[in-house]
Structure formats: C-alpha cells, structure tokens
Image (cartoon, rainbow, N blue to C red):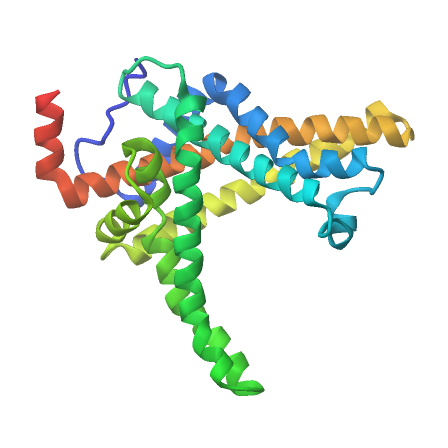
Length: 275
C-alpha cells in the first residue's frame, strides 16, 4: 500500500495537485518502468519496419511508405500497443493507489485501446467542427477564423482532459467518458490550464536535462562511431520515455481524483464507505 489517500479527502489547490502528482510518480515509477519502456519501443515499430526495409527513418521517408499496405499494418499495430501499454501504466498506478492487486494490466489495457481510439476520434471530430466554418471564407478571413477557433478548441481539450483517465480507470465507454469529463471539468478551465502549464514546464525541463545528458553520453560512449552513437541515443530515448510516461499518467490520476471530489464528493464518499 502506498499510503497516499486516493481519491483525495478534500478538493486540492493547484500546488497540492502537483504535489500529489509527484508523490504518485515517486511511489509507482519503479513498478511501471517495464510497461512504459515497452510502450516507447512499440511507438518505434513503424520506424523499425522502415529501417528493416532499407528506407531510413519514417520521418525521412513517410510519403514513400503510404503505398505499402504492410506499413499501415505496422502503424496500426504500433498505435494499439502504445495505447495498451500506456493504459497499463495508468491501471497499475491506480491499483497501487487503491490497494488492489496488480497484474494483467496490459491485457485490460489492450481491451480498452479500441475505446481510447474512439475517444480520440470523437475529440478530433469536435475539433474539426470548430474549424469547419473556416472553409466558408477565403484569404485573411479564413486565417482569422482558424486562429479564433483555437479558443473553443483549447476549452475542448481542457474539458476532455480527464476523459482518457475515466475510460481506462473506470472502464467507461468513449462517449460516456467524454460526457463525464465535460461535467467534471466545468468551471475549472483556468485552474486546470494553470496545472497543465506548470506540468508542461516541468516536462520541458526534464526533456532538456535528459536531452543534454543523452548527447553527452552518446558522444562519450560513441567516440565518433555513428552506429554506437545512434544505439546509445536510442537506449537513452527509451529510458527517458519510460521515466516520463508514469509522470503523465500520475498527473491524469491526480487531476481526476481532485475533480471527482469537487463534483462528485457525496457519491464518492458513499462508494468509498460501501467498499
């Protein structure tokens, strides 16, 4: 047991949510490294396929891959595995927080990957609706609308920010998760914006520090050998992704826990007492 009250016993301030994020991260990161690392590796499946076919990195040869049916298979498989492993990380953290047995998270995450794809499609369609009227205009008017549409799209992203946690942790469907997230986040736009902004700054600092460390180690170990430098960099990238992924999921759990207490406090207390 982690001895971290979850859900929180009361609504939290911005600083307390960030503190809860770090507490969850520190207490669970070692138990999630393997799942997170496998998720990072799964995200490289299209690149590995591209290298195996002698086409270079995917970013350098994307358009040459579009007519290859096997490329699309690798891309879809990689995407589903990434979602499944990331869902498994969140499920393991949630189990540890709520003092439940761990194990089988990847299988459960794989079963919810399809619903996560549907949720992503639902959010993408909502964004498309915001941008669609721009095509009624031309020139500067279209550009102005595209810029103005960023306002409702920003609200949309904040409103749906807890939907993926609800979908994975509670096992709700895509539409139900979207609706509940919208309900939980209503009235918290600026507070959530501040939380995500600070969390983003922390991530950027981490990426900068680890990026500098990766460059230093790659140069030190490789000693000018391009193959060794590339291999060293790849290992460090996987390690960085494995460390950062539990931070993302810990932030999602911390925010969801706070919102649940704020909006569903009475029902939540009844569910906790019933268990």
